[in-house]
Length: 224
Image 1 (cartoon, helix red, strand yellow):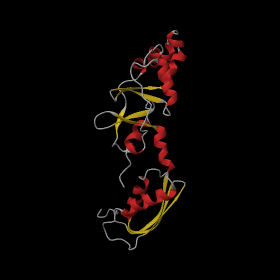
Image 2: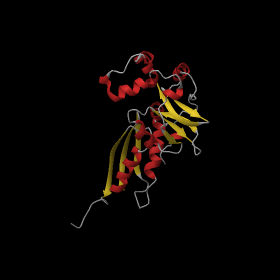
Image 3: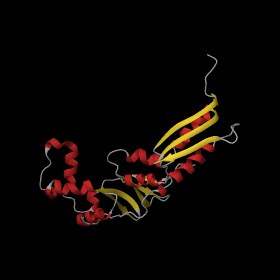
Image 4: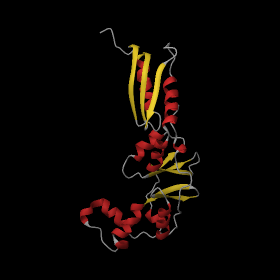
């Protein structure tokens, strides 16, 4: 089964703001958002994003009255510049981090795992905002039931059976709390390796334990 795409887990109706909204309106929008980040849009196109951290620098530097301490370095000075922001346009970080609706979850994970990327603006083929993908949205894949995971793992490990194999296939799939255990015997070692790999790629699987055996080691290098 193909990897799930971003569109399947994204938040489809995120809270958004426009450039001219006031600081206080942006703060209220963040309170209404579950993601801790709001996209800034114009004509449906994401221009930038505002996070809770962007707003909180107003408290840190008392509305821009306090100077940025030199020991904070360049990062502190960048925060200080936002401390007296009055509109969304002045608060936002630009350009907006974007990802396509059709992108795979693994691509999204690689980007969101980096500190500083709390969420991605999901865009459609025209570049317009289609949703928002936060780390919390990715965590939703772990809500899948063990029965659902078992069925998908079974389908995934059975897909690549081009060469002759045991008939019927001696392979059983057990799932407990998201952890997969593979039991049984297959004809080729490569089939065992494929089964473990395929099971690990099912979204929501937390671990794969293999008790599979094989008859023929078709991955053995000979002739040396």
